[in-house]
Length: 177
Image 1: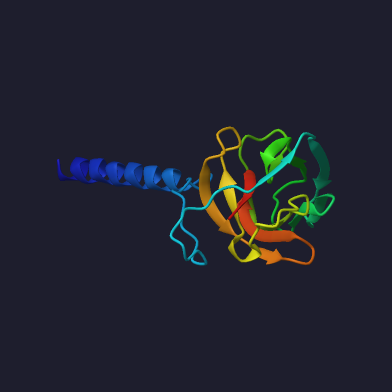
Image 2 (image 1 turned 90 degrees about the vertical axis):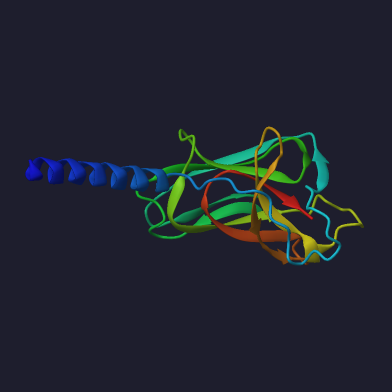
């Protein structure tokens, strides 16, 4: 009787451990928008509007040794060891009123890297006088609703008019201030 109880509780513990491990795997969960530490006026971030009517896209096969996929000055750099198999990576700048991009692994609905990758967004088409480069940041967005999901941060190069950030997953991203 005691042996059955131990075996049964061992199975329960094993099942609980399996569920915890399974729940922690997969694509990172979206988080509520975070306020930027560089923001002093207390307002929430909003996507910058830099309309384009044209969609541009490119793709390339990236191997285990890494590589990059560039669409003009916008692109992704994948280090060696970030992929477990050669993968077709696509970079798209969609027709949109916002400065947004989509980076995806062709044939996958979600994709996680073994180590962080670097993504650069060229915002030079945003020739607006009201942009404050000190408050620019990249956000992981819902590409349909444009809801801000996760603040990715970013380092701004004001001369090249680019913002660069690192991530472990592919998604839609947009520049906000």
